Image (tube, rainbow, N blue to C red; front, side, top):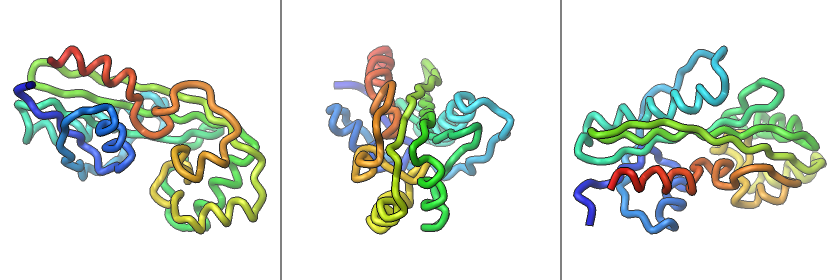
Length: 187
C-alpha cells in the first residue's frame, strides 16, 4: 500500500471515472483557480500552464501526496473553443465544427514533494457533417453544456464524430496511458 494519497485537482466527473476505472484510489479536491492565460501562447503551453496552475494550487495543502491537475481545450482554426456559455454558443460551436477537423489538447501536471512534471497530449478530431436538427437535438440532451468545444465524445456526442487520430482519452480530458506510465515513478 502506498504511503501517499493521489489527489485529483479537478471536479470533472469524466476524469474521476477514468482514474476509478484504472483502479486507482484517489481523492477529489477541485481547484478553484482563475483560469487566465496569455492568449498568444501555443495551445500545448496553455493546457500545461493551466494543469500546473491547478495542481500547484492544491499541492500546497497536500504536500505529502501526489496531486494531478489537468486541463483540456479544443482548438479550431487557431481559436480556442471553451465550454459554451449558453445553448446559442453551443449551437455556434457545433455548427463551426460540423464537417471540419479540430485539435483537442489535454495538459497534465503531476506534483509531489519529490518530483514534478507536466506534459500534454493532442488528438485530431474530425466531425461529421451535422444538420441543424442534429445539433439542436444534441444540445437538448444538455450534454454539451459543460464540455470544451460543446461535445463529449464518450457520450451521445460520439455520434457527431466521424473519426479521430490519436488518443481517445485525451479527448475525454485525461491521457490515461501516459499518466499511468508516469505515475509508476511516484511509487
